[in-house]
Image 1 (spheres, rainbow, N blue to C red):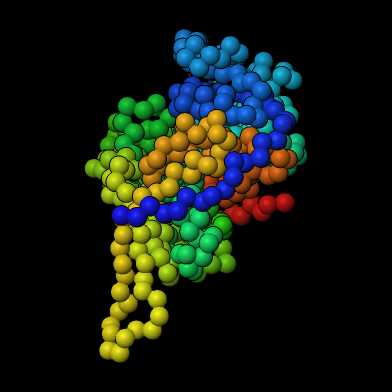
Image 2: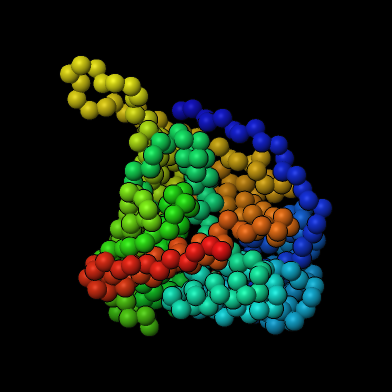
Length: 380
Ligand SMILES: NC(=O)c1ccc[n+]([C@@H]2O[C@H](COP(=O)([O-])OP(=O)(O)OC[C@H]3O[C@@H](n4cnc5c(N)ncnc54)[C@H](O)[C@@H]3O)[C@@H](O)[C@H]2O)c1
């Protein structure tokens, strides 16, 4: 096993400007609180949750005095520049619009929205108010995703040939809004890293539903499938992405995984999350006379931790696993996009493209795999 060289980048220059930020929704959201609190360009943070007891507990644990049981006073106040929404899925669209219309920057947990019209509303509002919108697609900032993006950008993977992603999770016992959710409505954990790597949106999809969703897990979405599997064609690219998403009924432990195949090298996610991934390298040069097939060397690699990338105060939140690591990088990306007055890397148009691809995949599954063209939101 060999450890790849850690890139020798210096500690990022820290601009002296500071912003004031709110974390709203303290289930999954609670784990983001100390990371924002410790960012050197954050002056202070507030927390918000309709559950007053949870709010008090998170505030006490992380020493956050500014506490709110509703978003409204935050939106009415000029004491906050940005809100990160980690509230239940059905609230994302209206809360995103409210944050942007209040003149504040918005980061939102996935999914961005559950229909194309709402994606259009968010993109057009973001363009009108000229505040940042970013989708906090954590899988695009996993340790493995950072590593493979580096390999690709340095040319080591060669030309991309094929991409594959999957997100397996069992949602029994989760809040009711998960029941019957079309799996592809929550597919950006599987598709997002692939599109981020390729740097292109998906333009066309064929998708099929699989399995049988028992009555007790069906909801109000009219979706009969616990699992969906799709093939996405990318814009101006010969590359196809194969994506599988499951929410119920599949006998597989949790995993958000991807594999990336170039013509020089390939990356494969490990079978289990606590294992290390595989890197494959094809032997370069001409084949020997009579040789059939090009030899490929397989190596299990130890991923770098990229701890040098976010500010030093966030290094303690780095997790060195293929799926770990995302919070310090994403907090730093969102905060520094505001401080440096540049678009976030996953901006509103990019987020809408990633999300629309899944919405169209479900439409295809409901039409037995018919090809569906995916609307493209262009960056301005
Ligand atoms: N890796 C990831 O990207 C990842 C992981 C988990 C969850 N998520 C997403 O994060 C979001 C939160 O997930 P969760 O499982 O914690 O959800 P959840 O439904 O358990 O609720 C989160 C919290 O939001 C609070 N809340 C409800 N209404 C609110 C309101 N109007 N204002 C403020 N707070 C309110 C609830 O009291 C709860 O504490 C979801 O959208 C989910 O899709 C993303």
